[in-house]
Amino acid sequence: MRPLRISLFFILVISFFSCGNAVHADSITLSDGKEVKGIVVEEYGDRVIMSTYEGEKTIFKKNIRGINFDLPEQNLSKLGDNAMAKREYKKAYFYYSKANKANPDYAYASDKMNYIVGYLFRKEGEGKLKDVQRMQEVEDWPKRSEETSSEKELEERFGMRVKEKKGAIFIAKVIKNSPAYSADLREGDKLISVWGRLTGYMSPDEICRLLLEESPGEIKFNFERVIILHKAKLPQDYSSVIDGSFDMLFDGLTVTELSEKGSGYKAGLRKNDLIVSIDGVSTRYMPIGEAVKKIEDTDYDRVRFVVMRSATMWRE
Image (cartoon, rainbow, N blue to C red; front, side, top):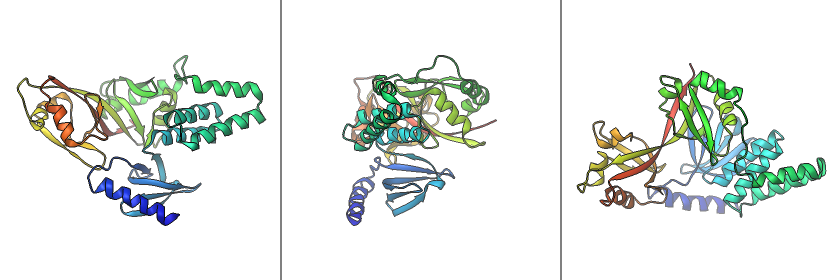
């Protein structure tokens, strides 16, 4: 079966990389901050096997800082695995149930849910079992009743606060001239990942601890920002609208050129921004021609971009 698996991967590689639309990929962030992209085809206790356009690579987990899967059910299951390792069964069941909702056919998540139910039934009795099963129905779990020490420390050390909204983590506050402010974070930004670990469905307290417990120097993260660009009433081509250009690169639709005196820059766009959506429509499967058409559309006097950026925050 191994030759078949590899050959199927390279069919995917040809279709993704040769057309310049290689946005469907897993990524592994190494301990030194470097990133390897491809498809994770096997995972063992001490290593991961990843197929890349350069061939198959074996990466030992001791050299891995984080694994970021392309599919949401895999990322949610990874959070469940982390909770399982800590014997936090309620939390693990919550993440696996989210993965199951994202993809009901994803057997890994459903198997893990069944395991937890069976384990608690044998070990802790029916009362604990019902308590865990209720977690599947609680969409806003976990809630906070009061400010935690981690949140206070995050504001003191980085000058920022975070909040959870509908399963996502947003920046609730940024103090001017703080490390967070210098890293370009602003109130309203959506925190996507820290050192390659997706933040979706983590609690604010978990995010605080993740930021505070990482390496003593730098912290690398990705965030999304909404940018509204107001257009001139006269018809313009897209490059004139943003005073720049974009292209479909490995990660997706990316701003490749941008005049610092132009309308796009003044609205908040930056070179190397990954354009996640245009006017609420994801660019993930959007041809460049359609993206151009949406920007040039004369029926609307503004364009709403959601962009993703990579940034580094330094501890003081």
